[in-house]
Length: 186
Ligand code: NI
Image (tube, rainbow, N blue to C red; front, side, top):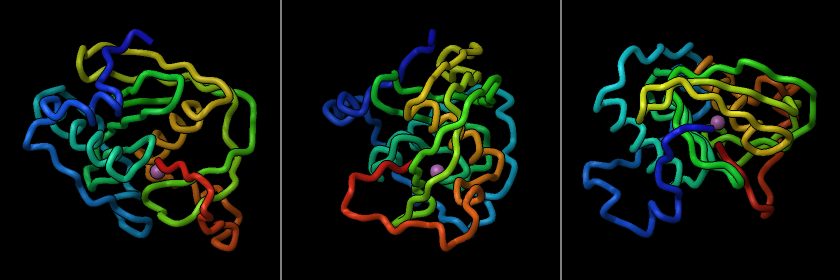
């Protein structure tokens, strides 16, 4: 992918010195909160406030726990996402967008902003996204196919456009309560 990578969850948790004392776990906004419905603003410049935001997002996401988070979910209407899924390096992207998608598949999706539920929706098979790497300031592309990364890229980029996965369901009755099955939230 060419991105500079943030510490993986295991390293993050094992090495307290990587976690600055100022890191914060922020309450996650839930469906119904208007900030989740805004089209988030573009990040214009990468400064320390953006790095702090991203660190808070990692902290909040891993604490939840989840595999992805978008800034509006912690009440910040900016186009910033973080994702950490198996078989891919963790990524943080500024102003991400989907540049290519193809195919359709059914996925069982959940969201940290819709706790306790999941739903079956249609996502793309192949996804190519691009955005700015917050550590280098360079544009990077992320390619994913038929996996959790492909799903998470679409899910998190939906978030910064004010879209929730539940919007793709025919109605609230299609929400499935979480069972004891392992859950994946983002
Ligand atoms: Ni979500």
